[in-house]
Length: 468
Ligand SMILES: *[C@@H]1O[C@H](CO)[C@@H](O)[C@H](O)[C@H]1NC(C)=O
Ligand code: SF4
Image 1 (tube, protein in one colour):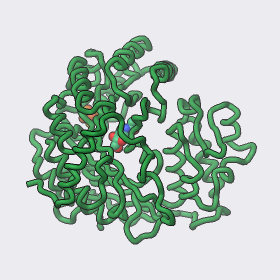
Image 2 (cartoon, rainbow, N blue to C red):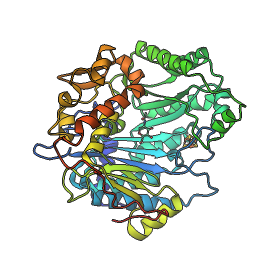
Image 3 (cartoon, protein in one colour):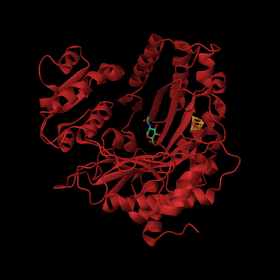
Image 4 (cartoon, protein in one colour):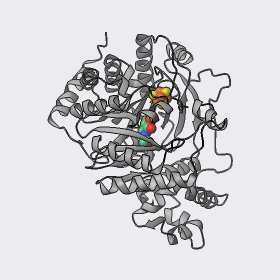
């Protein structure tokens, strides 16, 4: 009984029709009403929605995500809670009357959910806010749960973009990563996805595995280039505490990859992908033919988003609390506790923190610099009406000036951004820039009260949900 309101069912038909007449990358991110602020409004008139599916069939050796391997999933209950929480959060936010520019189903392994669950969540969003037919709707899919038939079901549910966790096209590497699929299965999944979502299929690849050579990585990347569509995400393997792989490295069963090799792998990948026509539009992301991820761009542009599902993060301005009080919200991570909370109070928020103006600017800086567009003056001005980019970073003798002389950063009429070379070393540039921001914002800075700056209305020990 996934029957939503009429408007919502109408959305599904319209979305299917839009997908049928517009294959290919669809509208360019940033086009349309999505990222344009409403004249006179304090905040942008758009938001995106992240939906977390917290289950996997098996835990990968490197995985530290909020995911659970359980014998059976009560999908009907999870679905009802996702639907309920989406409605509640849209109601609590100011997002309700606004345009939802993208929805992203991540996990965990959301391709293990049934298409009916995906459809029910989309209908809930469409019923509570404005979800245009052309909105980007991405589903993360693992090759082992990605038959053509299932993918067709997701497409009928309203999904119009896939992100496939290929990770590697080498069976030995896939085993080391503890992945459930083989290279051949990954290949078949990407081919099936491209057939159904042409121009809108992204693949994830991991580099920097223990004992992986530079040659092995570049050969793997070439193989992936022969297979891929117009979007690639590259992740450097990180050995997170508590994962099986990190334990093997700590116990010296496997070597940690040397830092300079990792840097060479990243550079080699960048060179190869740029030569193949990809734009390196974000530290870890490459796109051609304009196939950038609208959803992820909304994070990097510090727009508003809701996080639905266990452990999901959100950033939005709560209704009636004015344009300045952007709030960080995290849902309870453990699925059963989260479901109980949703069933009893409509949402499973575990933590709410008001971000101070300085904290918001720190996010604008750290996220915006990840993209090749950087931070345009208009965006900065929305969060910092009194202190321009020039005023914060332009003074001679400061960190930015040295970074500009090194050819890593640019500050001009278009705003503040990394050069192509700067993107590769962003992690080492950011701390100095954050310090410069904090100093400029210091006690003498204009604008709302500095000082502690943070009120925390809802961090509750013991994992209980907070209201409202
Ligand atoms: C894009 O956003 C999704 C959802 O939050 C996240 O899971 C994914 O890792 C992001 N991709 C990149 C490349 O940052
Ligand atoms: S599929 Fe993704 S979320 Fe699931 S265990 Fe593997 S890495 Fe973690």
